[in-house]
Image (cartoon, rainbow, N blue to C red; front, side, top):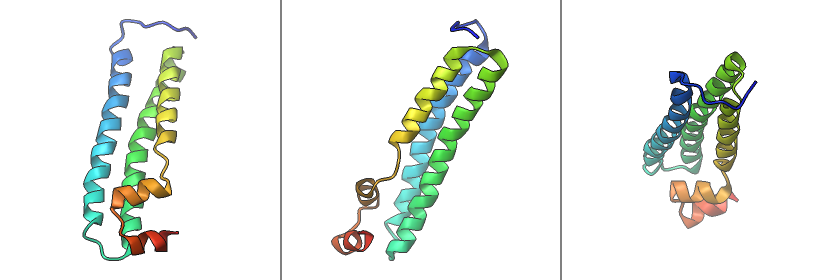
Length: 115
């Protein structure tokens, strides 16, 4: 195991893939959330939010897993560092009450029902 940056194309691919998955996850999340605006019930909006967050999270998690797998093959600690940074990014994306309210543009009555 080492902290070296070899001239291997996969060492450039992994960080690029992580960044691309982050952007793709955010794009898909926003695209799916736009459908929730037309939903009447709070439970329907929350179901759409859950679906959007799962898809966003799966892209982040998948790129992290790829980085970990390639780390186990190559033994390069930089790939483990990328995976760790991606896990930290995933932790910051945790849905909170305020994030849900802002993302779904909830009205006063829906905010009260949410808790």
